Image 1 (cartoon, helix red, strand yellow):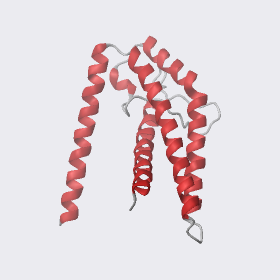
Image 2 (tube, rainbow, N blue to C red):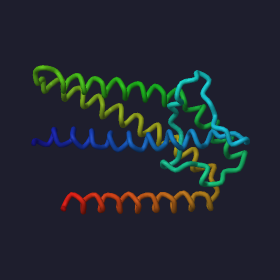
Image 3 (cartoon, rainbow, N blue to C red):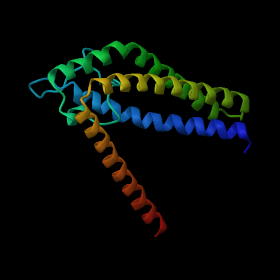
Length: 173
């Protein structure tokens, strides 16, 4: 495999990782939109809410946000909503383009490379947008909440590592 192919593979792998983080972030968004009655926020359109906001995949409610902080988080999500939706649409289009290029009847390496580069660029744009939102949310957290967020992230990573090692052990059987 030449160096350029290796970069494309790494870009796609980074994109897949970003997609996993995005899925966790969507879960956090829904949790953050609970109102005072404990009922989940319902999107106006009636469809499944496919938001983007969250915080390192952690449900923000685990950080015991104040009402003022919750409102600030909602405001941050609202301010960034259009950019994040546009980035999500670019991701869907780029993924579809790569799928189409790789599942064509013939192998067109140039088309596959172009589609893979478009996907890598879309993933980078989405990651930058998520990082901006993350930084804005981080700024409204108290030092104690920031410490708790770091601790929860470490716990989550430790559980993930244990699961991977368990799966590796099962594969060795």
